Length: 85
Image 1 (cartoon, helix red, strand yellow):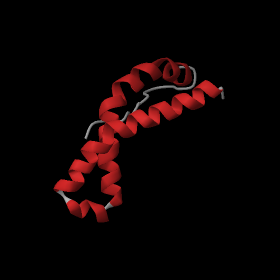
Image 2: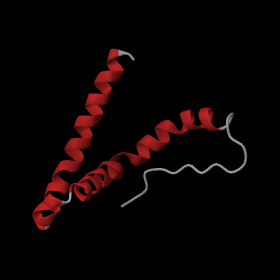
Image 3: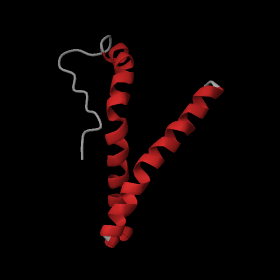
């Protein structure tokens, strides 16, 4: 892995956290019982991350998906993406 790619991952991580942290904290403030439900907090956090990044990730990865799936698949192929919350 190139060093630039490793730092790009950190940039993406910082952007994901800065995008999702405030809406997640707002949800916790509105419903404090979420503090004892870490899986629900994780679901809320990731729903905000995917809401912001899903379209770009899907568009950016379409070429890779086609190169992986087309030569190796037969019949119907179901590509399940991030979805919506």
